Length: 413
Image 1 (tube, one colour):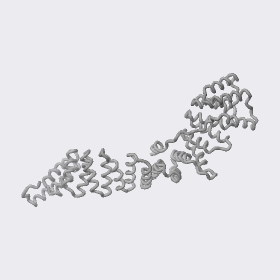
Image 2: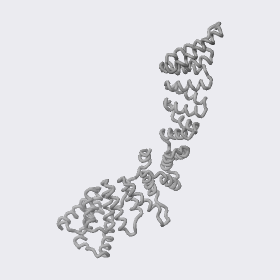
Image 3: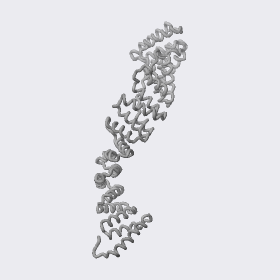
Image 4: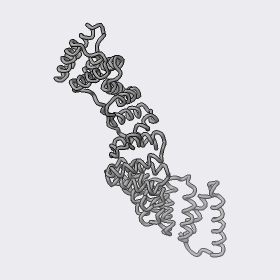
């Protein structure tokens, strides 16, 4: 069930970690930070080459920007300001080549580790390369340097940890932003991510409480009702699970699998009539024997005998199987329609000559109809089978005694 929840419920959209596109803004922020921290400043030549590269990237001439910056770095014996390396990383990243952007971001971070933008873009490059744990670490460093800190970036770091299969690292981050002290309503995406973490950590009580909280905010989201269904199933609260799934199917067109699951939940909750009505939707024109069986069984459990018999008759008319004939025969016998039941048991023995119980039951039907010759033939056949022999021989002895005390004056069958 857990595998189903993870596969079916969580279809996370790809995380959009901020990429610094407006390099002029980064330049201004970077220079201010440098001045404030009394760090090495851009030289006139570095400022000029970064500006030229920025103009090229603004018009999407990324290869031009890459050449301008690469040539400058090569001519400088690889000794340049961190913003030059950072800009080259951006030129590759904007060209959708994160693998080539990564080493330049790493170099920029090594040259100057106090610029949030560097760690932010480095985190994005790691994420694009599916190095999710490193992406999360970088995004947290970026947030620690940002002023003010960003809950969105914390969420992005948490999602990176989720992708890295590190839910324990993601949980405190998400709990912190979800339970923020500023009184603002948390983003539903944060709550969904936290819900996934609770499920991954098998913290079912927390998952259930959070799902209810999400439903209070997004009650029209069928995925949440589906999740609530599964959480109740794990608690064996089948009536509540069925109620949740009913709402889910009212919000979105249910699949055949969901209709069957709803029927199963009602059956396990002890409401066979509601189970039967769900199963009946599965029969359709195909008349799958399996679906006919489930539907008829539920109606029988609900004591709707006539409905069950009608469904079984339609089933044997369309796709007859031994199992359907056997169920029909048993239902007819219980309703004391011994003529029809005898015919049905006869059909069972024809389809499966080794099914001894069918011969035995045919004999009982014949007895109830006072067809003694037919009863004798059926019990004689049943006596050929070890498990039914004692009961069949006893019925045959009773027939002998009955006939001896009631001489037959005419045909009995």
